[in-house]
Length: 156
Image (cartoon, rainbow, N blue to C red):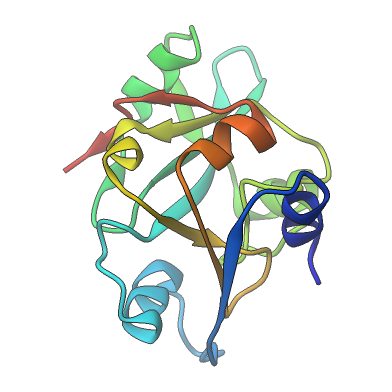
């Protein structure tokens, strides 16, 4: 049980848990999840921590098949510039390890921005809080659980 799953259960949000064997030698966590689950790379989302120009942090959630557009993420957050947070900073902030960072149940929650592509899907797959653990939720779960905003933050 991870904080992400505990939060979804506490809020009564329907979800599905998908576990798979994580290869410790793998550093391409999103692609590993796509292959292991057999889900399209446009439905499996990665969670990235972003630092804005004022030092505050936000979460960007985009499909594995896309890149996080930092300029679009900054604009969605009302900022001018953004850069990816260092993995160690993201781990301390979220309470999760890199490759297992979930947008749900973070130790120190930050504003969450999910690429608008998610709203076209029935289910979105994202990390459940550890490597080798994905959760599938309806896009609305992001709004209910973490007050996420949907914005065009992916670069295809």
